[in-house]
Image (cartoon, rainbow, N blue to C red; front, side):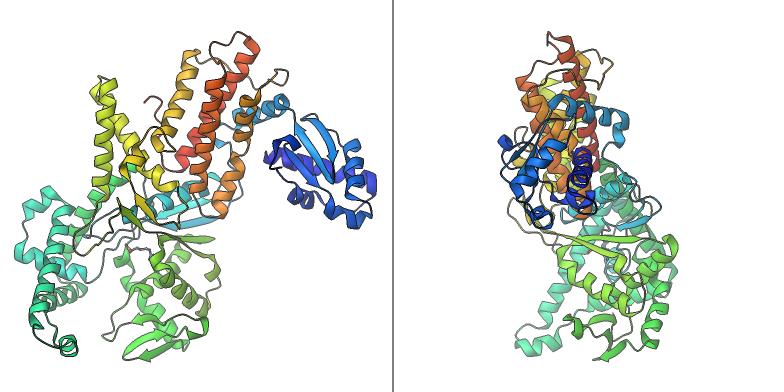
Length: 590
Ligand code: ARG
């Protein structure tokens, strides 16, 4: 559609010059004025002539009429003036022929561009905190982040996917204490990250119990001062030892990180995701002092109750904490050091951070600090936030262990799909492979069908349903395109269908295929993968209507059959690309 719109704008620009003289409107300006009429009766594309009326000193009706007589284009079956509008009716065959030839010649690159050529984007996403549960709250950052990476790559950017592991911080002090007290090496080697989380949950509970006991019977003010836990003290001491390179603790820490990573990688593999860098928070420990020093020497640091802060009052934000009273660094300090490092290491043109909207203030604050520090690339930093996830209505809490793990959610979806697949397919291996792709795909698709800022209440039943706007439905439609082509004996296809007379369902399908490049552009501009998800659903709807209304393999008219098979093949290509861009697998059979 975009191509035709562009072509039309160019034709109109020269028609206006021919009729009314030079220098009135550029093709770009006309392009922006062209509309898709809400009512199909009026045509497929329209130019409202009201704005032209003033500069041309003619009535819009006259202008529309004059242009209708001048413009000629074989892709339109009718160009007519109606009121102050110039309406274009597309010729289904000529238009579909062009769309098909575009899809066939570009193949999996249809919809792509080279707008990002020579530019680098780094994307910071997923980034779970080691030894804390990898729960469904991480689904958003993981799949939005990866989809944005795929979309950027699709339009030519060089992309660096960074998993900024939360592999440093006081939680390791707690974990070390818990492990030394109650840990069992073998159990962890077998049970993996779950065992680490169990230890972490246990020590948090015990710290809380000690704190509660230490303030029993005290007034709230007294309690605030008296609250105490010996275990928490121990944890702080162990973390401090770790920070000072205590060999035993360092070894435990490395082990905890690798056990966790092994587990995360299983989930990433199910999603078909890999990262280019796993440089986590610990990597930046020795890179922070230089940035703190720069802040200090620029006079940006203030001391507030012993802590070092950057005052952001002028920008209506709370202070940005750089150093705690005891001199230890904080989350923003690390992010600033990491951004500087990444700019140097990758020379990015854009750095994207995908996290929950709860962190929006954090990003706004440190982005501002980077600007104040005089880094002229501050405006290349982009925060992409998303809403919260609850499951069947229940909220999530991390500290207490009352969470739904991502791997459990996937496992349940896979098990349910397996049960259904087994009924129809006796081949166990095949069923397992399909169940994995459909189960995981269902969850990702469900998640990515909403605008990212919307809060989501996850309903497994809805996600897995085969009828409805779901992943299984989209994958099923894809498999249907494959089976139609197979039934037809995978024939050689031609895009040259301009002399075949097409009906409404074929034309609607071709139009839907034609808007894919535009949707890719919109998804990128808004950092919104759900635009691609909804496009995939539109395409499925258009294809399924075509499939039900038109005979394809059994069509008697050879030319029409060829055109329909070509449309089916183009749907397969474009739907496949759309689904892969949102991290959904495309099995050929379901
Ligand atoms: N590890 C953090 C968390 O789970 C997310 C990190 C996001 N990235 C960043 N550069 N701050 O909350």
